[in-house]
Length: 138
Image (cartoon, rainbow, N blue to C red):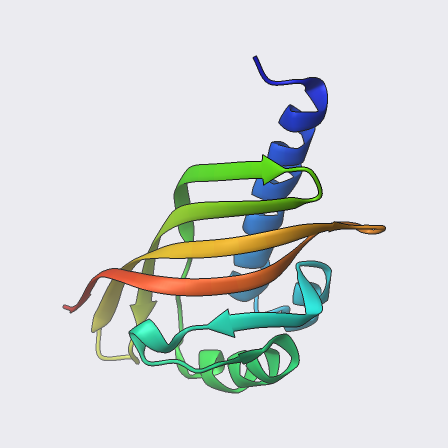
């Protein structure tokens, strides 16, 4: 049976995953500062993005995502594993993205493989890697 601390840790990490999606979907990229550690490694290359440290990827996101008129993140299958002050998770994402005003939509299905650390400010993500499940333009 999970302890109250383990339940709390898992819920806090799940909320962090939702906070990431909310920041991206609402285009509030500074909100990501409460999701990632300053030295976090992020790898979006599986779907054509970049890999690098959080500060570089944050700038890239703020430059690239405004090119898409609409998009959203729908997360599921939260597989969160806590080991003391470290944790990992694998989460599935459905992410449709409008490709302009012509009605074309790119449907992305992928896995987020993440690593976390407990900090004085709470849980923070130290690593995020995307793995593609499906990508189709309709």
